[in-house]
Image 1 (cartoon, one colour):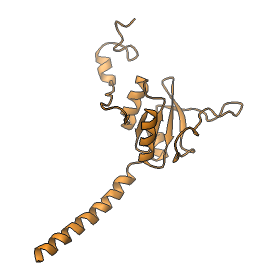
Image 2: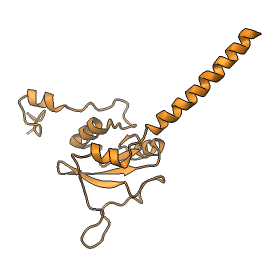
Image 3: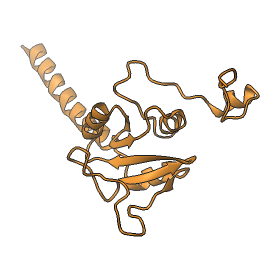
Length: 161
């Protein structure tokens, strides 16, 4: 009888402590806008409107839960992409599934799939993944490209002219 009480008490303590740590894990599954800006320092932010006041990136096409203030059109090495902030990681993942794009924590990276430079960038910088891929892309590192002797833009493209 005493052993049963001790076992039940141990389980109660274990699960109550596990519940506390789960809150910490959930809190850590978001990039704040400040963290995102620091990580995306290599990208330049695109204006939200052109000179005539026309919206350049339409965020209305995304699922509910989007943070319109934080979401932003960006440019990396002359390639445009869109970083969309969601309230939760689940929302960002679901949207990445729907659009066949990349996400990391609560951010979706749109217009990235199919652009190796952008794919490498979001994978290396944000640890982003495309949930539709059974095998995730492994980015080419700058070190391996420089060791091959070919410039980064042309690495792996010999014989394809």
